[in-house]
Each structure stands twice: as C-alpha cells, then as structure tokens.
Length: 412
Image (cartoon, rainbow, N blue to C red; front, side):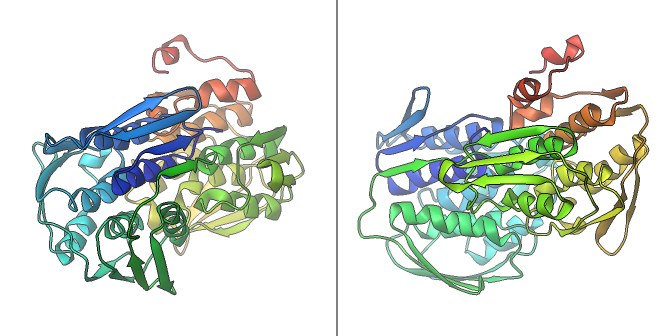
C-alpha cells in the first residue's frame, strides 16, 4: 500500500516544527504530500531521498519567500497556515483546483479567534495571512473539519510556552488522535479532557525526528472491498492498530461477513470473498470511507445504511450527489434518509457512463464499479487519482488484470 498521505504530510510538518534533522521511512508521493514538501523546502529545509527514506536537513535560510502553494490539499491549507504563522508575521497561500471554490468559512472564522487576519482573494485564489500565533488559550469550532484543530495543535507545539486549546463540536476525532500520537515523536506533550480541552506543552529541546509512515487505510479500503466482493487479497504495511480513521473499514467488513485474517505483528490484513449481508455504519468520523462503502453496499444482500452524509458537502466534489449519481447510473437503488444513504444491493447492474467529478475517490469508486459490475462502464477521466494515489491503476492491475482505453494511459 502507498504511504499514508495523512501521516506523511504531518511528518513533514513535524520536521519544520522541530527545526532538526529528520528521517522519514516508507514514503510515497502524491500531489497532496508534494504540496507540504514544497512548503517545508521553501522554509529552508533540504530534502534528500532514496528508495525507502527521506532525510530532511534544516539550512536555516534567512531568505524565505512569502508566497506558498498548497495545491488542492485541504489538510495542507488548514495545517500549514497556523504553523507558518509561528514563523512569519505575514504571508500568502495559493490554492488550486476545487479548493478554490470549497466553503472555507470555518478557516476565516477560526483564525480570527487565534488573533490572525485571514482574507481570501477570489480572483487570484490566494489567502493573505497576517499576525503571529502566541502561546495562550484559544477557543475553536471543530464541527466542519478536524484539520484546523490538528494544525493548531501542531503550531502550539512549536512555541516556547504551554498553551490551551478549547474545541467545540469536534468531528473526526481519530485524525486528532493521529496528530497527538505523532507530536509525541518530537516530545510535545498533549493532554485532553474528552476532546474539548487540550493542554499543549512543548519540550525544552526537540529531538531528531525518525518516523515510519504506515500504509494508507483510505487507499486500502478500495482493494478490500473488491476482495470482499469477488476475490482474495493480502495487504502489507497496514497497522491494524493504526490511528488512521479509515481503519474502520475492518468493522464494516466484519459486519458484512467477509473473511478476515489480521496479523498485527506482520502489519498485514487478508480479505477473502464471502456471501455478503447488508450493513449499518456511521461514517461521520471517517467520511473518506463513503465511496468504497457505497460500492460495497451494491453487492450486499439487503439494504445497507451509511450515516453521516453531512460530512460530504465540502470535499473535492459534492460527494453525496456524486455517489448518488454513480450508483443510480449503474442501476442501484440509493436514497437519502435522515443524514444517511440507504442502498439496496443489486444482483444485476447495467452499463453506464460515469463521471469522475475531478475527485480522486470518486474515480476509484467508478473503477471498482467497472471491475465488479460485469458491465461495460465508461469513465470520463482518471487523472484526479494523482491527488492521493497516482499508482492506483497500476497497483490494481497487479491484483485484477484489466485494460484501459488508450487515452487514460496519458493521464497516469
């Protein structure tokens, strides 16, 4: 499996925070991870890489440009703004793709509570940030995303005195768990009271970071779904005790009756096909699982329910509508009810043309539907997979041999 982009982005940011040499093992690049690497390099780090590891070396450059780019990465935007504000009193951040048009009102509102001025130029797609983050007590609204919470925790961990962060309505708590776990690698102490009050104490001296990046559970979920429906796969590099939110795919696979063999000591998960029954799952805290779970539901006997649709409105696409349109196109009955999808498993699907919505996870779900439905499925584009998993198609072909239209090879 590719390296977890959530972990790799955080590890790169930790190197910047520590201002020490860092070693990051088991990495793989995608557009989102490159965005954070570019920021770290712009901030004066030299990055050396071999086949398995990254070596980050601070150069303590005094000439730092004031314009950064986060590409289309929502995590990079929300994580790096508070971190950069610890070093620079004024800077700009350019965004690309769908991030130009997503609702980011939570960023502006929450940054103002930190004493930072954040304005967004809708013509040039650039954020202008002014002010410095200081070690004190802050209050944050976390109902839209946990990414800014993670960014602020990391930023406060870079300051020279303890701080307190109070958070209301936190979602995706497991991503905050991941952030806190990784901050321990540079000796930042974080205690919390029911995820509502966080107490952050930076160390007197940061150690050199050395971290192993786990395999990506978000990517693995699609392979596991394919195996559960028709096949058998053993995936390596996945920590069964991971803090990654999408490890919850295991709960669903157990619920539907797929055969699982989990070897914690080997970091491996094996999935085998079995007759699948309907499931009921709340994906509020792991919304990236919606696309693979929707595909899985198509092949389960009965009606499956996936809760938490409200978390899908502000992704690379209107992901709730995209899921509805994809499944409806192939003849699967899907309805919305009380913030949940109800999906009726279908023994017979139909040929269809599916949109990619320029959304990496919707491309992956479309490819899975094409492979599992037994029907002629046309997908308009696959280029969006570069955002999180550029090798998705080639890795999938090693599992299930298939061919692509010639035009798609130009997009890989």
